[in-house]
Length: 130
Length: 158
View 1: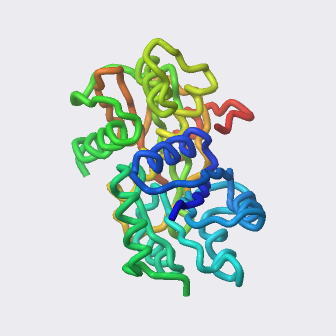
View 2 (view 1 turned 60 degrees about the vertical axis):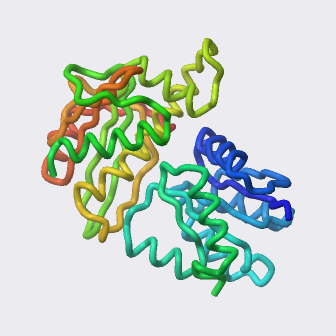
C-alpha cells in the first residue's frame, strides 16, 4: 500500500523537513501533499483521498486541535490516520489529542519515530477514530 | 532549574532539529538574529523566550533545514524563517523544563525582534561548531521590564 500523506504546518521549512523525514522513513509513499493550516488541510482532504496526516498544533487560521476535531466529526474523513508532530509537551493536551485517535511525535524527531508511530496507529495501539 | 538543564534542552533541539553540533556553554553575545516567541499559560500567565543566533549558527540552521548542498548559501528570508522555526521548537521544549509538563501553553508565532543586550530573567548561551545560540527566558514577573527592552519590528512575523 502506498500512502498519500498530507503534511500540515505553517512553516514551509518544517513542512519540507517532515516531508524529507517521511521519505527517509522507509514507508511506501505515493503522493505528498502540504497545507499551511487546518483550514487548508480540510480543503485538501475533501479534494483528494489522504491516508495519513502529519499535523502541527500551533498554527494560524485553524490550529491542529480544531482541525482534528473537525476531521473526527466528518463522516467521510473521520477514520483518517493522524499523527501530531509538535513541540507540545502538555500532558493534558497530548492526552486529549490521543483520545481523538491521534498519534503523537514530539519535535524534534527522528524518521524511525515516525515509522513507529504509523505502525502503532495501524496496529490500533493508539486511540483510533472514536 | 539550572542553566545546565536549559542548555541540555537547547542542545537537544539544535542537534536533532537543525543538525548543529553543540560543544558546551558559550560566552558573549549571539546576535544578530533575534527571534522572540511569546507564550500564554494557565490563568493568564505569560512570558517570552528570545532566541539569538550569530550569523554562523543562523545560516547553518537554514542550510540544514532546507537540505542545501555545501557552498549554496541560504537567502535572508530562508535564514529568518529557519531562525523562527528553531526558536519555536526551542520555546516548546523549554517551557516544560521550566514549568513542568502538566500545564498548557499557547505559543504565539515567532517574531524578529531587536534587543541589546540579550536580556531576561534567565540567559544561557550554547556554543556550537557552527556558532552560538543564546536564549533568554522570561515569565510574568519581568514582563514590564522586558517589554521596555524589546522593540518589535512591525510586520515581522515569520
